[in-house]
Image (cartoon, helix red, strand yellow):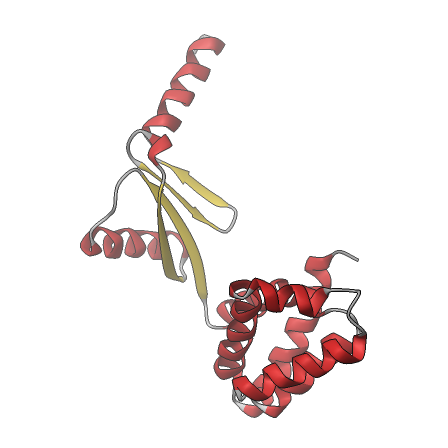
Length: 181
């Protein structure tokens, strides 16, 4: 079983518990916080996943972290369960899967737009509206700069890729010329 599948199972289980408590957004925020702590504090991440440090010491460290973060008891139990099962290293994947499941449930799709230059808010809003019309979902847009595109933009919503870049157009033109169309 792949890490993605395992992460999705844990995320689904947590989401079910969160929905029973009406805390699905709060649990998502807490999961985001824990994943961010492990990513942003490399020393903490090394200590949590260092096999030369005993399991009990790492679990005690996790308990201290959870106490410091003042997380919900169910979230603490979930994270301790992950530690017991040796799955704490999958926390980032679980966090992503949880957010994806939550988005799915709320009819939200996340989209990435790569463009040469920074877009103004009006353009971002118009682009999000067009993608919402195309997908039938509420779109949360992330805009990234990519100078390699030369001009235009590339939008990606899940598996759907809309390439309106000059680089893409040149590639299509080259392909068309080499095929003789």
